[in-house]
Amino acid sequence: MTDLLRVDNLSKRFGGLLASNALNLQVTQGETHALIGPNGAGKSTLMNQLSGEIAPSEGNIFFKGQNITSLPVYERTALGIARSYQLTTIFNGFSALENVMLAVQAHQGHSFHFWSSARKEQRLREPAAELLARVGLQERANVVAGGLAHGEQRQLELAMALASEPELLLLDEPLAGMGVEDSLQIIQLLEALKKDHTILLIEHDMNAIFSLADRVSVLVYGTVIATGSVDEIRANAEVQKAYLGTKQEGQRFQHA
Image 1 (tube, rainbow, N blue to C red):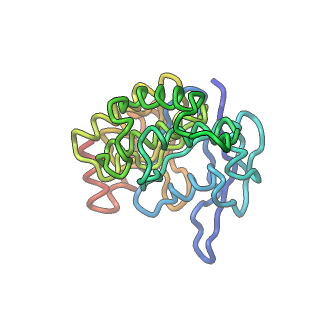
Image 2: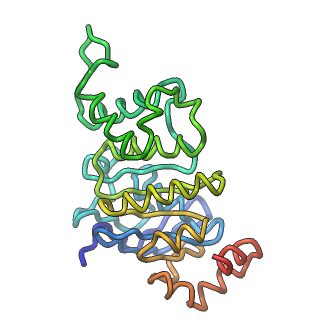
């Protein structure tokens, strides 16, 4: 099995706070790999370093064997890394289709013709419509994004991420703020996406994690304390102790 992403001894300091602490992680080509851990464990900080939004204090990040530690976000995107966020990052005043068209345009790297309407650009509209269909939003293409339901906005954000044709999807709490029905729909979508993409996933919904993940890594105080299959992680005494450290997290882990 080939490592698509490898993190070696990654550390990140914010003043006196050590958010990542000599962290090591390997994500294998084709797997869905989940990151779990108590609140404040450093999960989002790690995602920010992987996507290039913040620079590590020490250590290295490798993608497809290339050291990308110093590369900016746009170069990592060009190499095949895409990210979604805890909070949606869509253009609320544009339609769902127009949002994805903008993402397609950014990936293709061409400018709109000055004297033509961008909305009529078939080389943008056609792939954008295909991406909306892929995430189940084909019937909502002309709805203003700000008027979409929360779950639909999450679907739209995934369509925009897919516009860059990524090999690796970094998903930061895609089920955040969702009810049961919306969560099930996103889980089904992720099940479909994992057939064609490697996914690194942060999520607090343990049922979703244990349903989707091929492997799970557990972060505590900025370092990985365990990596293994779902069954291995469930049975790991050190992981159970970490989650039982807080009542809420312990209940999530025990009842997943």
